[in-house]
Length: 380
Image (spheres, one colour):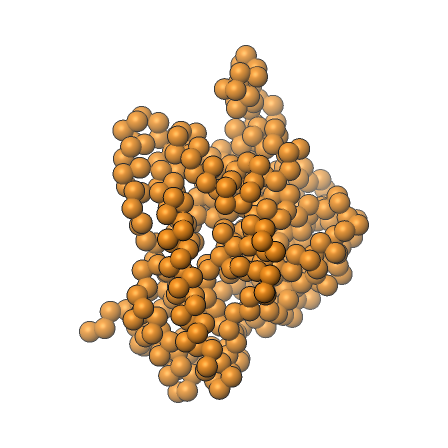
């Protein structure tokens, strides 16, 4: 019997369990140990950040960025409708109302024209999602925000670690950026994330919020003789045991990314000859972008074709999936939105997008089998 092909699978690359055991035996299993320091340094190197604060998830990193914005009643945050709930809920939790923008139809990042239509005096931040690890239209977004230096750019870079835009790392393009190390991502530790700081003015307060509202870091740096409660905050930090796992993954990032690129290229080269004939679209990567190779998606000609193809591939033992239900139409999206907005591209893409299996355990034969199943299903 042919083995099924999983949609995603976390893969150990070597050193993860040894690092976790070392952390356990050291007696320092909470945050802030040597593995935490090393992992943060590797994230800083990858993004060019001033500082990286390891968090329990990308969601908590977004929540920390929302706290740093010091949102007030009446403030709004622009969020693309086509993204995961965390991109919006982190700011809704802090009392902001959400303005859902549409996405542009190629890279699936926030559409600068849609952002421009929503921009008003209440907007405090724009969340930029680099879908699939391909940079959003940063030229267009920067042009829209050129006269609004008071509006922060928050990169939700959950898909984008090691991607680049005009030779700049994704994660370096906003005031804040957030990373994900969830076990569906390129670099994993089960659950984990990071807040990347790109503005020196945020450093001191970020560490206070990160340390449960205290100046504990200043105390350990010898800047104060005792630490005390200074501000709001929470328990955001990643445990040292998970930081050990994460460190091993980050130290093998080059080989992880190389394998993902090989799978991505194989899908692209293998499917390109059939795209026109069968009516699907391949991912679009602008010339000035290097993708992070987080996922591989196709756009089917219509919703009915996607449903049929997914069912046929499931019968072949191949797990596929779609992606987000647009947030502007979700019950909580309606509840937390500042006003109703139109996002027709998000709605259309949501109905047609199909994601193929994509993980480092895929063999070359697996990739060939996925492509054969896909093309047969589309002809069927």
